[in-house]
Length: 108
Image 1 (cartoon, helix red, strand yellow):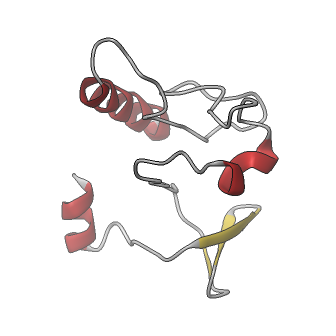
Image 2 (tube, rainbow, N blue to C red):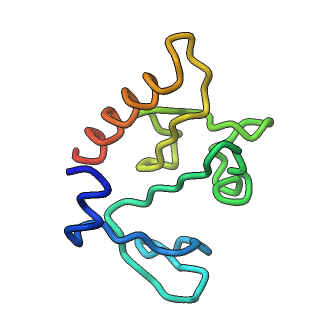
Image 3 (cartoon, helix red, strand yellow):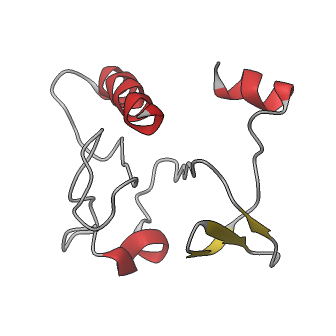
């Protein structure tokens, strides 16, 4: 199932801005709390990760993720990044490969 099909079918629920994480719950900017199976954060063309995950110790000194694809940073299992490298094989190809690897990792 793709994301769009998931949204249409009710299996995927887009939500507003995330304020924080509390255990297995996600606190949204409006104060509501949800318990998702997964959180997908899409920053677009700018990194801007420091304000989102900078406090978790998963970024290097330049604000780039310490791991990408299906690899995770010790102490942050379940947190995956893609699109923050510049592969010689091409960005779109790498995004597709990473998406499949991350999906397999999430599926267990």
